[in-house]
Each structure stands twice: as C-alpha cells, then as structure tokens.
Image (cartoon, rainbow, N blue to C red; front, side, top):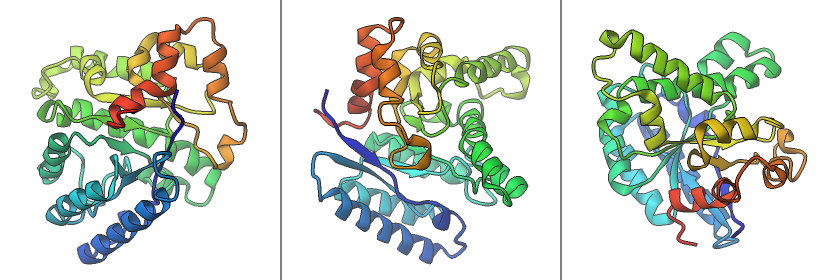
Length: 272
C-alpha cells in the first residue's frame, strides 16, 4: 500500500475574521504555504486548501487557485462562519463548484466551535472533547437532514478527528427522526443512511481502541478512512490505529485495504 500523508492548515483565525478582504488574504497565504510545505516531499505530502467563506465569489476564486497549486480537498470547520448555517443558499455556489471539481470537503473542527468555545473556553479538556466530536456530528446532521446533500448528491464529505464508532448510533437516530417526523423535513426524500452511504466518509481515530470493528461492521469498509492525527498529543502511539485494524480477525482483508488506503486514494483522486 503506498504511504502518503494528508496535511491540514490552521482554521481558527480564518473563521473569526470579519473583513472579507483580510480573510481572502489569509486564505491565499495559507494555501501558498501549504503548497510550499508539501513540495518538499512531492508525492508523499497531500494537502487540503482553505477559502474565505466570508465572500462566496472570492471563495470560489481561491478554490480554483488552490486546486491549481495542488490541493486535493477543501478543509473547513464543522461550525459554519458566524451568522450562517450550512443549509443556507449562501453556500450553494461553493458547493456546486466543489461538486463540479470533484473536490471533497474535509470537516476538521477545533475547540473554537460554538459548543467548545461558548461553554468550555476556560478548560481545554472539555472544549476539545466536544469541539472535536459533537460539533462535527451536528454538522453532519445539517448536511444530511438539512438538505445540502440532497441538492448536491455528488458532493463528498470527510469527517476527521471526530471518530467513527459513534456514527452508527448517530445515523440510526437520523433515520428514526426521518421516519417519525418526515413532515418537518419535506425536502429530505431519501433515508439518511442512504445519503450517508453515497456521500460521507469518516476517519478512524487513535482513541477508538477496540471500537474499529463495530464501526466497520455497521458502516462498511467503503465509508471509512484512516486518520492518525500525527504529530499531535493524542496520536502518541505509532500504529495505534493501523495495528488493531491490521491485526483484527473480524475485519476482512478487503475492508482492511479500503480503510488503510484504498478509500483515500480513490476519494482524493491520487491515482496511485
């Protein structure tokens, strides 16, 4: 299996800039640096770009520029910019462009999401726990149940640093609400599970020891990718993710290959 690494830029500053021009300049600087950094190991380092969501026209312009520089995906926080929600038609031109370019969106939230920052800003223990997981779960609910992936069915999204083992329960809960309260989401024509299976990928994370098999069994090998979070503090044990997956007697060899590399290669269009 080819070995490569996907790197993500910082997002916190970009998300809380009110000036669209400053946000655009910051996005350009980030993408320029990411391109330079990845060029030091061509073919080994793949990167995701950022765009200034404060101005959709500038966002689309920078999306194309980052693509020309070599970005393989768009990196955004699961929490939308202040004053907006992801189902807002404001974002539709950006989603359409991403769908046309076949560029996936990577959701990678931080402690500065509304749940983490607004309630637990004084203690990183709590803000990190909810910012990395709950914010992304809410974001996924909005994209699936809020109609984004109904309007843009070929758009692909990747949820990273949130974990995969809680997703079976979360998708099942979406299905239950869709079945019992369909009149509240009349735009939702398909079962949330079916939308998930067409458009969503989730990263297996280092903290999920012993839970990978449950996620693979329920979600299937096609929906999972490997995420190590290296070199951060919560990825202190090399092989903590790959080891349990590789050694598992309950996960088929085919699903091991998919999770450990094949899904990411196909999703990011690496052609390796």
